[in-house]
Amino acid sequence: MKLKLPEGTFKAYLFDCDGTITDSMPLHYIAWKKALGEWGCDFDEDLFYAWGGMPVAEIISTLNRQRGLQMPVDEVAHRKESLYYEILPRLTSVPEVLEHIEDQYGQIPFAVVSGSTRESVMASLTALNLLDRFETLVCAGDYQKTKPDPECYLLAAERLGVAREDCLVFEDAEMGIQGAAAAGMASVRVPLPRERGVLV
Image 1: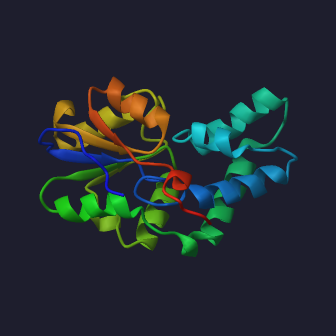
Image 2 (image 1 turned 180 degrees about the horizontal axis):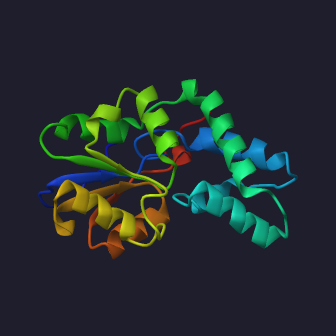
């Protein structure tokens, strides 16, 4: 399967990380299920993908509100991240996206725009030997409003010194696609793992 890019010439590529560059969503889901299960909290896979791009702490806080739970946000977030790192050796890249990274690397600047922590993004990209491909990483904590707000994309464009209309966003989550549109940027949707036939 090849990704069909929008028409036009782009001066920068902005990539979500999890589920876009890295085929990490199935691994993150394994970690989430275990971390939340320890607190008796179920996490449906469809909801997990629907909330793609939402920061870890926000997911836990939202589940607490919706389910009437009292999970300690920092503790559960740390547990989830540590469980993810344990299975990180199983991580692979998304080949359809890697193709565009390799094709344009050195021609135009790249940024990562993620709702994950900087530590998580760096660990994932380092595991795949891709960290040096990106001029900047925009991660949780670098911006105030999360996707679908456009703030993170606009910050990435500013750091790269490229006008918003000249950026192309690669995203797997609907919130990310909405955020790119709100930023006035073209986007390409990366199919979810099950749409690509990926199993863990």
